[in-house]
Length: 148
Image 1 (cartoon, rainbow, N blue to C red):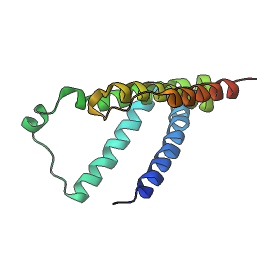
Image 2 (cartoon, helix red, strand yellow):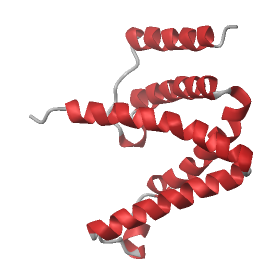
Image 3 (tube, rainbow, N blue to C red):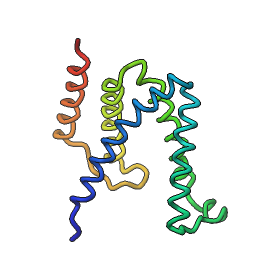
Image 4 (cartoon, rainbow, N blue to C red):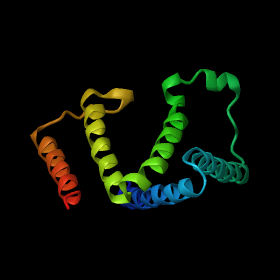
């Protein structure tokens, strides 16, 4: 059985770098505008992934292949643009910690719902008392961090 340690490490790394993304985009949004900062974020990311795909010699799917994909699976980029735009707009107004904690809180609630109902094809993992208590502790943590 394959060790999950590398995946756990990569997940922690992803959490760290996405935490830097918000303040960086927020600062760029102050210099430009949130819309332009969002555009730059996605343009620079598109250039980087394009270079990676060329170097890897990845085959690009045809329009016919893309049209066969369930539409829901194709809105990730739209959600990403909305997320980056909102982060860029909100971090200068709420601060990095407040914004990130509220996002994590809303992500946990949404993830619990997605898991409980098996939405978007994920394995059903029912909400139980331990998950509810864990979520309430997170909520309490957000409240305490925002206390003056």
